[in-house]
Image 1: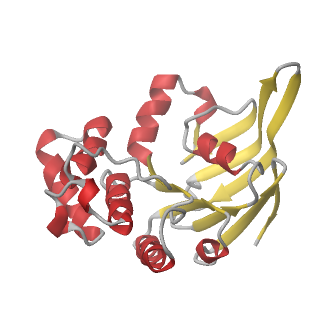
Image 2: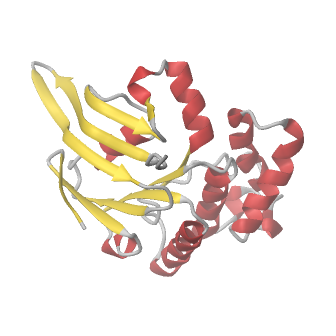
Amino acid sequence: MAESPVVELRGVQRSFAAGDVEVNALIDANLVVSRGEYVAVVGPSGSGKSTMLNLVGLLDRPTGGAYLFEGIDTNELTDGQRAWLRSRGIGFVFQAFHLLSHRTVLENVLMSTIYNGMPRDERVPAAEEALNRVGLGHRIEFSPASLSGGERQRVAIARAIVTRPALLLCDEPTGNLDTGTGDAVLSLFDELRADGLTLVVVTHDDVVSNHADRMVRMRDGRMESAA
């Protein structure tokens, strides 16, 4: 039997009510992302990139069409089932890092293992392994405030991959970084991709999208082309 794609959008729609007007943020979106693929989603502000990311990340539901994650029709799931699937199958990396300043680097990464329900005796070894994977094993007791921007983003990546998700979703992951630091983060993404992780990166930066296997362009809520 053929392996199911990690992500499959089938005619997905997402609309919002804005007063008396219906806003179509996503229109007839069709997308297939195979396991181990690295896809960049590009487009200007307001094109629907963030709406698409929220749907793929199970943070929102479509108002039409179907979204299958690893062959599971997520439209059929309860909110609790979606949260369970998200915590075990999807890692998130954001532009703003979203680290807890009053926690150590290790504790920030451990947060994902707690939400994921990982057995207690596996949590610290898994967190240390993830931090070593991103080159920060020597910073585990540091505060995020004492780290550079690039190091903080690598902590965020370690937090996202510690539970060994099927999919890593990244929203403008180099947006707060200088060019050299951003390049180092992109090199890390290349390594994770080579290890078999599936990545979907939302960006407006050509440098970021050029690292991907495939590019999907969005404009006015539509996926215009894929290359």
